[in-house]
Amino acid sequence: MYGWDYGHVGPGAWILMGLGMLLFWSVVVVGVVMLVRYFSAPTTSAARPVPPVDGPEQILKDRLARGEIDVDEYRSRMSTIRAGA
Image 1 (cartoon, rainbow, N blue to C red):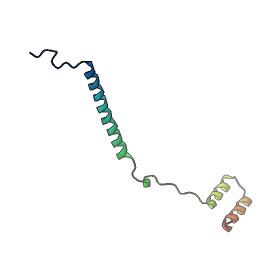
Image 2 (image 1 turned 60 degrees about the vertical axis):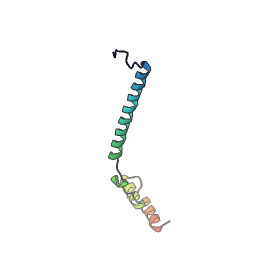
Image 3 (image 1 turned 30 degrees about the vertical axis):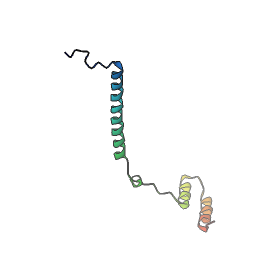
Image 4 (image 1 turned 120 degrees about the horizontal axis):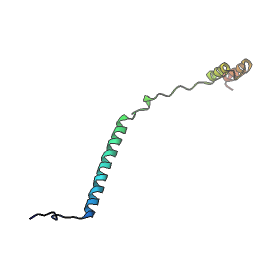
């Protein structure tokens, strides 16, 4: 009574079902990836503290230690910094 032709829908329905399944699994995979990224991301900026910035006196001391400036230039610039000019 019900042969192989019962409910025959043709190739168009198979293509739509395949595309629907592809769309469904794409949405599932993208959703899982977004959830993992959301829950693994740091929530505050306190997670990565910013290193302190050196002041001008420390920068001068570092330049003197590296040999970029000599002692006379160091003293001259340090007095300028401390004078506030």
